Image (cartoon, helix red, strand yellow):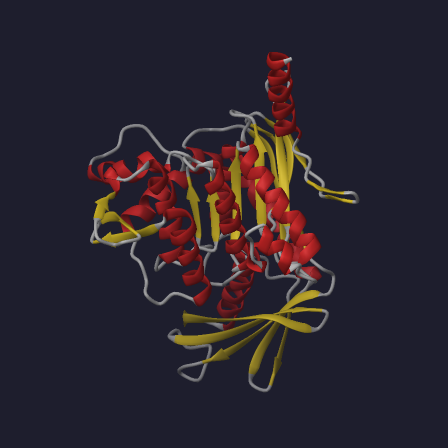
Length: 432
């Protein structure tokens, strides 16, 4: 199930329709609105997590001692209607909460795109006290997501202190809503925004919390600072996360990021010296938050990264592109912005290879390109690319780029193409 963010006259953005696929890429000029759109998506998703959900539209029945709830297209429609009413009613407050100021937005709307054959079936089973009518009753919820009658995902959820069956039904529908919103789990969003200024913020976040900070910060940046303050690594890593950490350490960091107490250090490959983060290179500063996001006790499933190529040599930007695709393949949702033609071109090459090679991987070609099948985007993972184009009146038009497969060209980044053509013409004129 995909969420489409419809935005009208938000800041300098005239209009945009952003599909929150598994991998979303924003490219465009400076001051075109990419960062604000990322922050808006982050903030709106956070604000919607506890939105009141509709009870109508869900089909309820009882069978073999279990109370069953089916959420299908009828409930999805009710949910979409309620969600957009909630957005309209609370838009001004949400803008203030997210940006700390009354940022203008004529319309923010979300469309739920689901297959007609998609539905959820939840079963509620009482766990204690033998009756849902008792105030201290605890309920166990088993949520199953189906498509074409096939069970695609299963989730378990537990509710404490149910006062009645209606309360258990409402909590169950909230859990289904959070699954739709997060794409992963009924427990919560698990999202993290990495700002373009992450290097400096890592050095100064303790001072922000030590004194009452003057001025204001946007919600996603505040959450990033709070993540740094409360960060704790876990040894109980999934194999997929451990593999991602190992790739980042080997191909980008060429060492490890180590947390000791509330201090962060960098250890090189030899491991014979520990460098405090404030003495490490800017590249280490930029990559450290990625390592923390992958290794944190708090599981991060949605990662937003503003200017993903910051402080990376062009060759390392290529490795970053591989890393991001591996994160998506591991089940994370990734939203990035980039100003780099190198990063965009590398991603485009990997997207083209993914279309060509996933079903019949050409291992000889991959070997020649120093790539692996893990660097190809899985067929069930969807990517979308948006170009932010500055208009003459200071407004920005957001265009979704089409993937051209015949002939195979991938995404046509006009912004970067114009710049490269200009540099080529300039060099030709100088040497002519």
